[in-house]
Image (tube, rainbow, N blue to C red; front, side):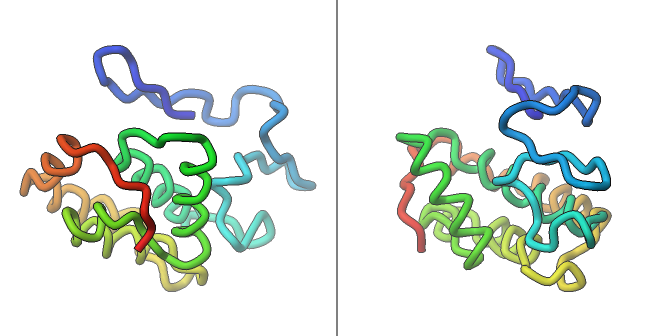
Amino acid sequence: NLFVTHDDVLKIGDFGLARQASDRLEGEGGKVGTPAYCAPEGGARAGAPADVFSAALVILELLCPSFGTSMERAQVLEALRERQALPEHVDRDLPEYAQLLRSMAKREPDERPSAEEVHAELKRLGKGGGLSPILEASPDPVIA
């Protein structure tokens, strides 16, 4: 669970400590996850690559400061999950982030970068200050 304070500080909470909630899945092995963020391989093959997949969806949400409706949000996330498609403004304004997100959202776990590789790339991209155009613009939910 990710929370943003009124001061725009990102806080991470829960870490699976809470009991099952209505919008969560709990599988045979006690795996818990929010369905919209689960990797295609599901519980049987879930591991670090599944976390990388889920992180791609979270990062995409961070790059899209607002959605007009919850349906738009669901459509944008589904487009990345199923087709590695991104909103136009991400491709146009943040091509390196777009490339990273597509690699993180590959359907095959073995084709995704490791968490260490993602971390290194995010650090590299963050030094360039490339997020300012996207944060100043209102997002266009059109999927490329």
